[in-house]
Length: 170
Image (cartoon, rainbow, N blue to C red; front, top):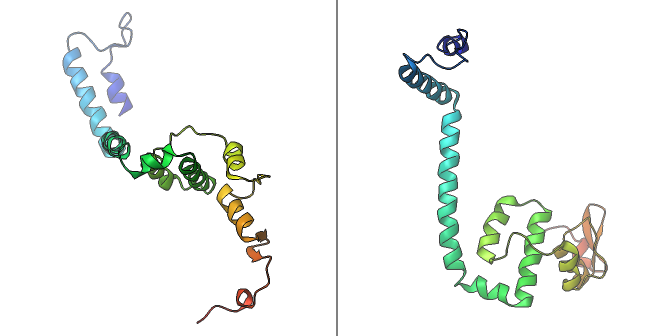
């Protein structure tokens, strides 16, 4: 195929690799047609069309969401300092565990900007004295509130309980 495309180029001295002038319009149309056919047969053109459609829908959805979210309950949530902190903690949890799809929905629904405060700032405002890198802020807050500590593969309560060691019902 490459040789067919190259054969349409004028390779005579002074031609500069441009299509010959006498047949330039026809050759250009033939070349376009061949490129489109090749891209379609390789599946590349379909992928490009799908990406374009997805981005168009995303742009439309973003416009609609920004209008509806700015007037809904979630906008009231982030206007309150405590509400914004809660939303930031949830976002950090989703980021920590790489829930990218959930996060892409959560940002517009929560009215949080994509650029946010640092993890350290959020942890400090949430009341964590020491931020660990091995777990999310939400996990650390639950650990702190319930007395659970991460140990080995599971969570174990610092309080003794007979129900905690009982096997699950069958």
